Length: 298
Image (cartoon, rainbow, N blue to C red; front, side, top):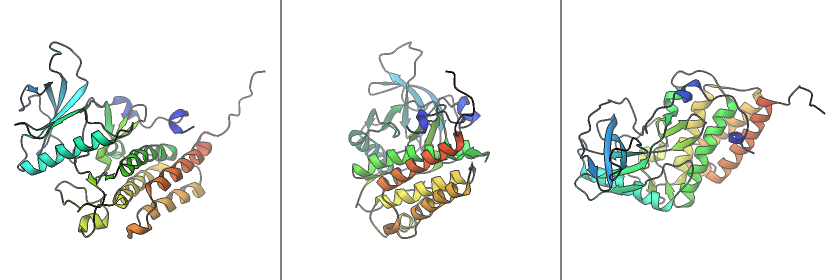
């Protein structure tokens, strides 16, 4: 039984004030109530703009035949301000290709896409969630079981990607969305790559979480690059995590150290990371929850 099936402390009060949109971009956002994309894209109706950045618009979406419906269960991503047609086509094509091959509860899905239309677009489920970055911004203490729980969920999404022959390529706190029940979703698949292909140097990559070799561009895309980024994610959690014992924290730190090894050949594979996180999660829950001191009724 994993953490999501146990009683654990609230992740954070902020998660109960969950956002009503999917927020995949890095950096500050500019919000607007008016969309500059068509009102109909393919079989979809484009609604209120939720997020506007230099490169894209995130808008509410619903089926085009849902005229008058109050439900907006999808989001539509368009790229009206992008200066590079190639970058947009690659982004849309990569996300659609991954969506066809890989499905996982902790990985954002792609429901529809078009890279050839006049207005390229992506359609995804609407997530009522906040980013990990916004959760950690206040640097308030978080229980260690929560840190391990979130990281383990993302590691399982990565395992699905890696087993299908893909790497994510841009794992950051802004690309991990957390719902009020603690469910974590890895988003923004626009920089995914097939393993063993040449590393694509894309604008917008967060250098604080990128592996040294991915920044140098000296080797092909390898799963070890994602392992490094996930190690940085776990380290980020540890900076605000509280632990009930130094021995457990030391075990977690040892895993982080291995994941952040400068040599990609020395980093553990994703299957090993998942198993170690599960074991650490169990151990953390046992120490955090502990046995009940209340007597049982006969």
